[in-house]
Image (tube, rainbow, N blue to C red; front, side, top):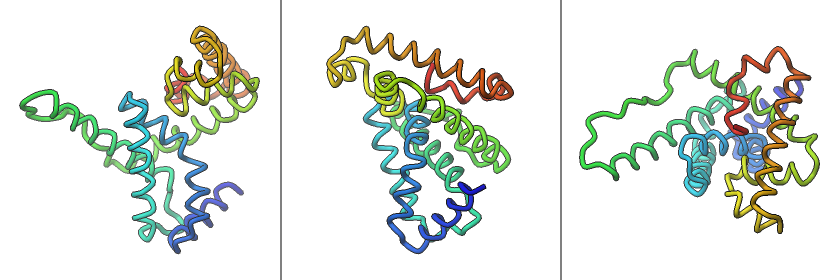
Length: 199
């Protein structure tokens, strides 16, 4: 409840051009948005570019929000649509003619609400589970899964072998799944989204 109240205040401040409120919203949602985009575009650099575009759009459209609007839902839809735009561009570049792209942007409000609910719960549970990992495993998981870095890059950054990175990821994935299963058994089987980052 307190989190929701604080977010409503930040949205109100955002509409007034408060950069600090924007920064707080960015800190809360950028990992989830990046992970969602990366899942779709499959390219870390492209995902970072889309992430920047999404939050730039949030700032540019800040005047359109009111205190009851959901920033999370808005970010989900905009990141999804911008990712699809990237995929369409790739498709157009790879073939000479495209009659029709079969995936359409999200525009159904009921579907958006359902996706948003799973999206937020998934990230809250994931963040909670990641927070209890040992420091090195948490570092490897964050670099690979949240930031989209390759195992080779992470190995070089941390001065460990790529095999160690692989082992840390497997151990982290198992620990996260076990944590969610133990602490949130009701959600363990129903929230499919939770594992798109860690699979």
